[in-house]
Length: 84
Image 1 (cartoon, helix red, strand yellow):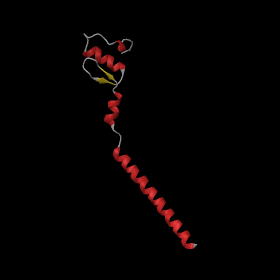
Image 2 (cartoon, one colour; image 1 turned 60 degrees about the vertical axis):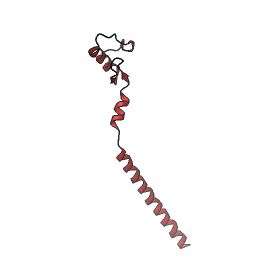
Image 3 (spheres, helix red, strand yellow; image 1 turned 90 degrees about the vertical axis):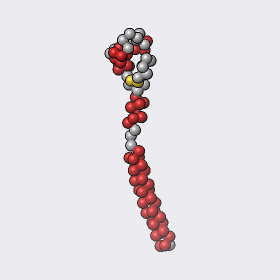
């Protein structure tokens, strides 16, 4: 009886140690992977200029770009009501 009790305690301790080791390993891998800023920045660029294919994050910037870089080209209809 005493021997069975001792084995259960030992296995329980090993399980706890294994879980702690695994959690530490997972945290290390996640930290090593880090946050990909390039991918996040690229995902934020949702407006594309129809003339030069430059990408911009918001319609206000898009309209400012279009007015300054392509003044002779007519404004696209999606920018007509945007306040720059």
